[in-house]
View 1 (spheres, protein in one colour):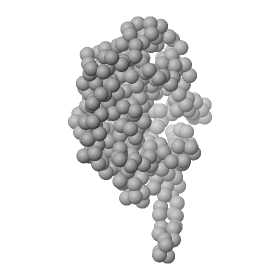
View 2 (cartoon, rainbow, N blue to C red):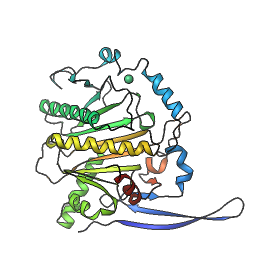
View 3 (cartoon, rainbow, N blue to C red):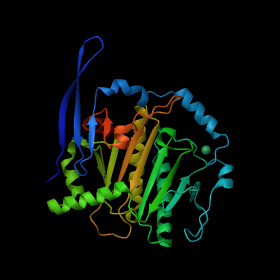
View 4 (cartoon, rainbow, N blue to C red):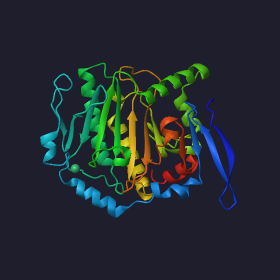
Amino acid sequence: MSIEFKSEIKTLQVLTSDGDLVTYEIEYRSDPLTSRISVICPYLKEKWVEFYSVQDKDWLNKIIEESKENCLFCKPLIDEIAAKFPEQQIEEDILKFDDIYVFPNLYPRADFEAVVTSPDVHYLDFSTINTDLLYRFLSASIECIKKAYQKNNKLIYPVIGCNYLPPAGASLMHFHLQVSIQEVPFHYVKTLTDSSVQYEIRNHANFWPDLMNANKDREIKQKNNIYWHVPFAPTGFCEIRAIINKPNMLMFTTEDIRDIAEGLSNILRYYNDHGFAAFNCVIYSGRLNAENNDFYSGIRMVARPNPRPNYTSIDSWYMPFLLGQTVVLEKPEDLSKEIRNYF
Ligand SMILES: [Zn+2]
């Protein structure tokens, strides 16, 4: 067992304009695989609460209702605007699975990009159980990845991502997933694979099972092939991760996809109960043409600041965005205890 959870608690003092000395405690944590630094600042909970956990529900409902008008992904517009796959990418021009449409992103930013959406689901209600809905979206995404890979076996690094609501970078309010596939790994996936290879060389052991064994304080739930947990050094607010005991997405079974959908649905209900409306999520995979490697696929999901008329992007100032050092408000051990009740 060679996993190290490095942390250091520091005391900071500030003299207010009235001459009072205020003392704060912050905790530096280092990611056990990548050494990326996170800072836990519990005192910011009060200061930042309005950005994260106070929703302007009336305003949000109003903009959601307004966005239904002329929505590109609702009927009838979706049937007029949806782009089509060229034959060399995927045989069918648009993939359809019942109400789910999969079609190319008109403005791709990777070797292959597709949109996965349903004209019947404009808004995602976090408060209800969304397992079946998410299962159908994820199954359609994985079918798309399989078909793209069959046509072009250089497309070996797929991710399924979601940006939900404008603070998460979504340009449309309408709920949709995106599939992005590259011939080269995304930076985060490369960091994980390179770092876990280095770990194996140093310790003669696989990082992922070692992490699961050493991570009891932040474990949410292990169900079948999916291990849900809160990272020791989070990279976003209320970040939940999963380790999937499959090297790549082609190996995901129906049961794996259902378990992923169930876990994501549980997290959404937790987010809803704690006032969050926007999130980013990514499901990543090891390379599709290496079935026997030691990599584990995975999931990262973070809550984003709530949409509001004068939106403040409080989680993407210079420290997290340019320096790669995230500030969070909550101890990961406390978050994992709370969210366990949703699983
Ligand atoms: Zn819509």
